[in-house]
Image (cartoon, rainbow over all chains, first blue to last red; front, side, top):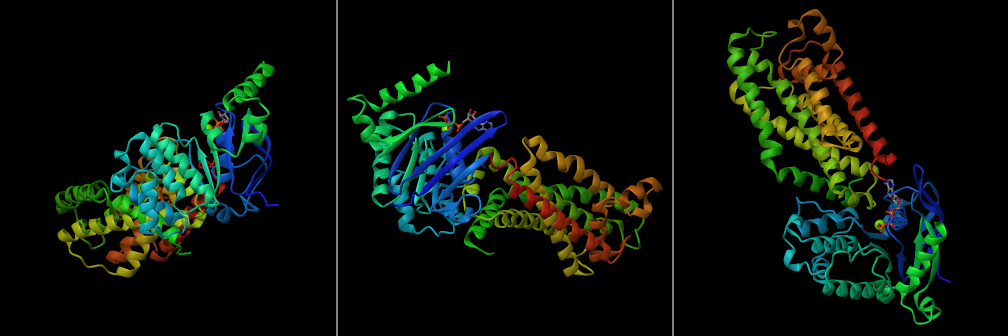
Length: 246
Length: 253
Ligand SMILES: Nc1ncnc2c1ncn2[C@@H]1O[C@H](COP(=O)(O)OP(=O)(O)OP(=O)(O)O)[C@@H](O)[C@H]1O
Ligand SMILES: [Mg+2]
């Protein structure tokens, strides 16, 4: 069978006394949309950050396309696009400059056609020459999505990509995520909108207190839950666990 | 080594300081021009020559170097620190840029700003005292090495700093005192003995003295020793910044 595009083994991350990830094993399959769900502080961002190279693991191993993310960071990072949870922007530069710089860092010259496509898809065409300072919150998040895509990554991590994005654009973003999958891109997203995960994800993983509670095909999970929504299944799972913890 | 990634980061860093020329090039220009007018012109007319050089001319190399030092440091320090603060440092941390490429781009852009400010300072001063330079190539090489040194220190302190106050710590409490002690405005032979001893321990003294030797042909210490010291300091600053960058300390969680 296909080798997983991301393979995480025994991943541990500690911040002082706090264990953000307590030994996670997870394999992301080529071409799937994987939704990583979990309450605030569960460890979603930490996990994504380690794969993307923004944070270093305390223990364990992460491989992307068969390569170690620490030793072979130049190869693994070329394969990854990351939309961080926190919005950031450089007020010195325009939308177009931000995209051209980001492509350049990845060794890619951004062609006009590709630039126009990204601006179009993320509805930023009218803001092409606007300073990032002059964008609304939702537009800034869309700029982050565009930046993550400039080098046509094989694996895209979206850390709460639709937080603060309006309904229409949220839907168009979903549509684009599906287009990306159709083109062979693997997508890992985190979200607190369970209906988003239900509509998009081929598989879901639920993490809490740094441990994966469940990884399953979305369809199979819903099928065995007797007509309940993903949200109900999720609340049941995480809620039960929290009751046990108490 | 000259990859598209490196060139892009370099271009971005250069554009950043060129976009606010009043702040990055203009304000140091006004500042050094004021120094020159006060110390060189009005006071200088009443001071004797130093080593056979009119006082106004004697202070030019030090003023040039002061602009170079502060601006190289401030450019890399504030640019990288602001990236850390606003979160845009993520852009380069997730990229395949190597540590050498990241360091090289920040240092080169910052050194370029330092040298530009130095050139502007020299142009203003030259209008008062003339433009002859004894050894132009040596002067430029030394100035460039000094710029690289402080650009490297700027990168290191941006990684270390967690507040703007900490970014300003080094220029306020280290660079400025050492610059004044370092003989920008006086020859070491004009100083009382304790101060003269302290000056000999000040690395900026050897930088100023070396550049003075290259520009005016007069110096207190050996110009070759100064060049060797400055090269060693540049290597140490780059090594420190590279080590910090590579360690991920305060950059990668
Ligand atoms: N740099 C850090 N220093 C100390 N603790 C941290 C750091 N980053 C994350 N943590 C802690 O690690 C745990 C996991 O955080 P993480 O950001 O991965 O959660 P998350 O699942 O993404 O939550 P959210 O849904 O709120 O985004 C939290 O307890 C958090 O406080
Ligand atoms: Mg998070």
